[in-house]
Image 1 (cartoon, helix red, strand yellow):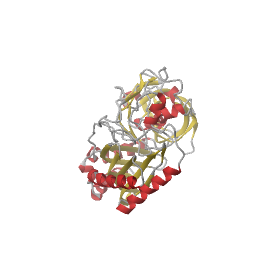
Image 2: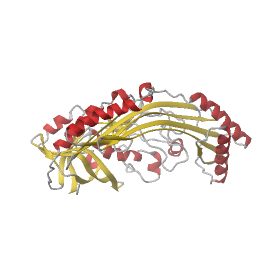
Image 3: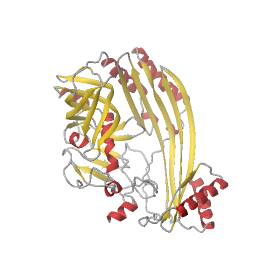
Image 4: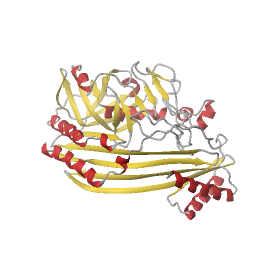
Length: 445
C-alpha cells in the first residue's frame, strides 16, 4: 500500500491547497483480520474482514481537527479533506499546538511474515481440530479463537514525513471447561508457525483437570506465583501513567516520584519497539521515530514518554510515543518489556511453603489512582501450593492489591516471554513470585 498511499496523499495535498491550506497530515491504516471461533468442541464461525481508512488532519492558525473515511476514491478523498478543514476552522485555537512534524530517520523493523498473512481457513481449522481433540479426550469442553492477519500503518505530511510499517499477527486462545473447573492458555506471534495450538490445549486441559473439585480457603494475604498472563493483566494497568501529558494533567501516580525509589530493586522495565518479541510500528501517531525508554531502573521510575506538544511544554525532547493528534491522552509507552530473572515457575512453586498459583486475572478496576490499587478476580486455573507442590484447585478470589506494594514484594522472576492478556494486548513479561498478595474474598464462581 505504500505506493498507493503516495498517490492518495498527493490528492489530499492538492485538495488542501485548493482550500488555501498548506499544512496537512494523512494517516492510512488497514488490516486483514481472519478469525476462526470455536465453542462446545466445534467451530461455529469463520470470518475474514478487510478494512482500510484514511484519516486527515490539517493545521490552520493554531487549530487542528481530524476527519476519517473509508472511501478512497477521488470523491471520497475530496470530501474527507474538506470536512477536516471545515471542522478545523470551527475549532478553538490551541496556543500550545506544535506545527506538523519534520522528517527524521526511522529505523524500520521487519515484522511481516507471508506465512501468517496467507494462512487459510483450512489451516486454522486443522489447528483448532487438533486442540479440540485434546480437550475432548479429557472429558472437557473447548472454546476459543484462532486468528491470523496482517496490518499496515502509514503517515505522510506536507513537511516531508513519509513513514510506513506493515506486520502480521497470529493469536490462539483456548479455554477448557469441566464440571466445576476450567483452564486457559493463550499465545500470540508474528509468525503463525511459532504457535502450538496442541501444546496450549494440553496446558488448558491439564489446568481444568487439576483444579477439579476446588477447595475453598479463607481470603487473606498469601505468597502468590503469578504466571506471565496474570502479571500482564495487573502490571499492564499502570503504563498510561508514564506520560508527560498525564503528569501535567495531574492524573499520574508518578507525580513527584520520578527518580525516587518506588519498587523493588529487581524491577526494571523498558519500552522497546525493537525487542525481538515485540510488535508495532517504529514511529508514533505523529510520524516521530520511537525511542527506547528505561521506564523503571532497579525499582526507580526514570524515563517518561513525551509527545511533541508535551515535550515542548516540559522543555525536553519528544520520545516518539504520541497517539494521533488530537486526542485526550497525549502519549504512552506501548512496547513494554519487563526484565526477567532465571527462576522458572516450577521452581517458584517448589520454593513456596504455602501459597497460591494464579493463571490469569480479569474484571480489573482501579480503586486508588495515586497508590495504584486495583481490584479484580482470578480465573481459569487457581491452585493451592503446599510444601512446594500444587495441592489442589481453589475457588476463585477477589483481590484488592496496590501495584506499588506488589512490585516491592517480588521475590523471584522467571525468564520473560511474550504474553497475551484478555484483550489483544501483548507484553514481554516474566512470571513473578510475590509475597503478601491481598485476596479480600472468595468469589461465587
